[in-house]
Amino acid sequence: MRTEWLNNNDAGSQAAPRASQDDGQLLDSYSRAVSAAVEKAGPAVVKIEVKQWVAGPQGPAERGGSGSGFTFTPDGLILTNSHVINNAANIEVLFQDGRRESADLVGQDPHTDLAVLKVSSAALAVAELGESSTLRVGQLAIAIGNPLGFDTTVTAGVVSALGRSLRSVSGRLMEDVVQTDAALNPGNSGGPLVDSLGRVIGVNTATIAQAQGLCFAVAVGTARNVASQLLRYGRVKRGWIGIHGQTASLLKGQGRYFHLDQESGVLVAGFELKSPADIAGLKAGDQIIAFNQKPIRNIEDFLRVLDGDSVGKEASLSILRLDKRLELRIKPQDSPQ
Image 1 (cartoon, rainbow, N blue to C red):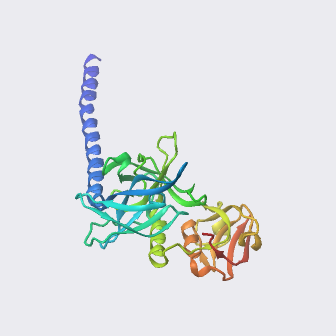
Image 2 (cartoon, rainbow, N blue to C red):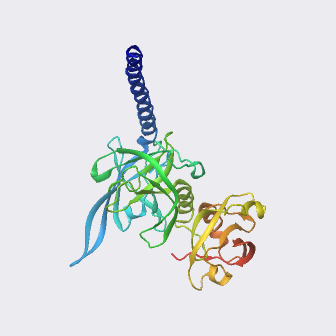
Image 3 (cartoon, rainbow, N blue to C red):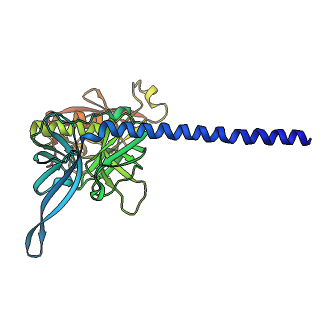
């Protein structure tokens, strides 16, 4: 019995170093992933310094502020947050090699808290834009920015949740927001949230005061769509039907019962009175599954079809209401600016 006890004890003492070694390898893999992602995306991250006009007791007064951004084309286009450059009298961009350049505002969209700037430099380092559809809860998320004036700071965490709604500074709900626990602080705004391959998966936008690990980024799919319209029109032209909605899974068995090739849609949480949604007969609890026969699986799908071309044109809206599938007619209006 004594010999058996000694053998068991020896076995335990041999297992401990093996576990420690495995932990070390895991930590090294994590560190390598973060470092590689930062090496790829980091050179495209810039610091944005602004001088803004604000109301004061003796009239308008000038004050300074700063945030982050990143180049997404080699000829000097930069993505950042709308609130970083709002009411700016002067915008300057600081690159990682120490260069400082004045920037022009191409356009901004307070509803999604996004803005595009332009500098004159060419052949710049570029951050690769990823795809929102590939995001998964739990995957690695890395934030790069300039919090509190500390240049090119890196924090890492995971994607905590997808499809969140967050109210923007304009008062409108931003849909399909990415939640992460990668720490953000003032000055991180406008910087990229990247995955383990260094691809941008979001534009860091907000934290919740007095909360820990509750940070948010505008999904890259939304950022790509908004940037495209800002470059084309100088503003975002979008259709508006007046609902508050969120991506939601269909009820168990609904997809099979209605012969749908999708597992989710847009759940109507509420709507504004006398809006196109109200006129069309939408109700809270309805689930939108198609617009003009195009499948609507999430908020991003819906925002994509509610573009500038949809304004003023009657369209069909397929919804699920309890155990029924209904077809409504709706005419989107131009989105209030």
